[in-house]
Image (cartoon, rainbow, N blue to C red; front, side):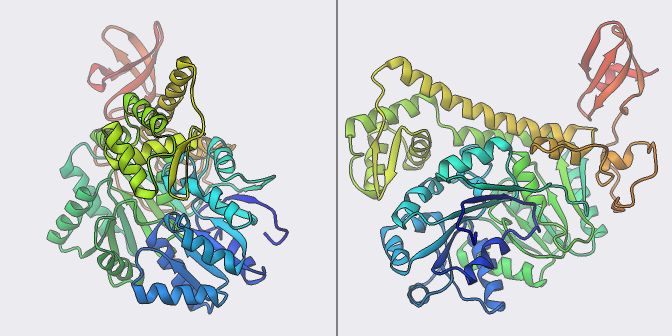
Length: 518
């Protein structure tokens, strides 16, 4: 950063990503602008900087008129660090305010949100590159804890980063114990959750896939005499702030939250992160599980697995990717409008009306068109920048759009495979993120349960774990027999199926009830 180079840092939770820009901000001439995705994250970091005696202004939707006026005054007075949401950075008055003071560095925190392939993709992030140009294109720093090699390349491309230095460290967190508890019913899932709460001394985050689910869990915990904070994006800002404060201060040791809570939250003594439902990808899971054990002490990352939970994520996936006909209809509407039908929200409203879609769906499609270089939304206007004269070319474009849906579906399959696997979970995570990993980690449930061929390494984290709610019917390597396929050996096993390599016919997947030992 001090050399003025663009850089991408892929560093695990707790590695000090924030220090990579907070320290240079004290030495560089000009303002360091930090683009951050979540209000909870901005609140947490600005408060900690204030405690350290560092002036940090913020511009987001939580501010009152008086607070925003004070923030503008701080920026004009030369605050070294300014936090903004990507939506605010896209506003002309904010760009003019920052340009007047001079920007020395632009930081894109949680940079996976930039990529269409990222698990927390946010359309407003696509405007950062244009904002950077308006600010004189200062050096850029992109930071994330989770990025496959493909995603990292996409982040560099979307931000227009030049000759970027890429710093990637191993993702392994030896103090985290990864485990999956198979819970085939709501009753068993709740019983497992209660057992975790009773067995864990310290702060606990419980993630739910939906707002409704988070509310239900919090209400049920209250009936069990567990006073938990509740955080989700649909609560009033004041309520969210109160929930975050209660949890961060220790007034409440448990918080039930959706994915709106967690990125960059620095609470060192979180002893367990429990996913009540599995998330949309391994990126999301590792990012959220990484909230545990930031102090380096032993902590647990527990996934409560139920096959039916996949339906929730499949539903979200359908909403994220509009139908092919909607995409093509939006393209034709843009072609008819030429300039996009007006400025700002008026342009989107006009497009939505012409295409027969909701404004929310139009925003998603426009973001996809922007990312693919078909359309551009800049300074409140939407326009086509590429027109398909050949209908076949347009069809190929639509096909590439559908490929993105398939990629996200593969990500969903990957988190399911993680939940069902009997292999080392840490090795599976490392491989997914493009890292080489030899041996067994000794800090996941599969390595703990596997008969040890040698003594556990000194680095092994001894963390007591719960027994699985429903025991597996067989184990890897066990000799089994099928009434039709004959003898074989178990290669992979879950509650729902067993993969067996039979002596005569090769590999087959069968239901456990059709197998017997021997």
